[in-house]
Length: 153
Image (cartoon, rainbow, N blue to C red; front, side, top):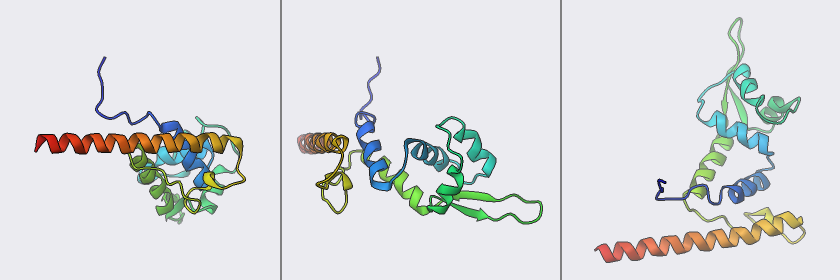
């Protein structure tokens, strides 16, 4: 079995839960944003094709547009259809996910992570314990990498 140098998906569930909690997104919303990230521009039919794969919600496109996750690239004029793109806000969420998957720690301060507030659901408390473990794991990996680099010098 082939082994990969970095186990990107080890903490995917924790990172995903944090992103959903931080940005108020559902799993389906996040899946759609991740899919559309590589689609530089898209129209409504492109959105609808992928949205068929996730849980059904009648006004999802309109809601994501109103909340600022999707924006017009070109508005409907005459026979040309509207073309959309992800907003900078949505692109930043995806980039933040990639940074976390690459080992950047999830913040544990109250101002940056709503899961660390006092009055949160039990699930948030379970995940914040895992965030602390994940951050410690990433710190340990970084320290091992630095030690190895010093040995190589």
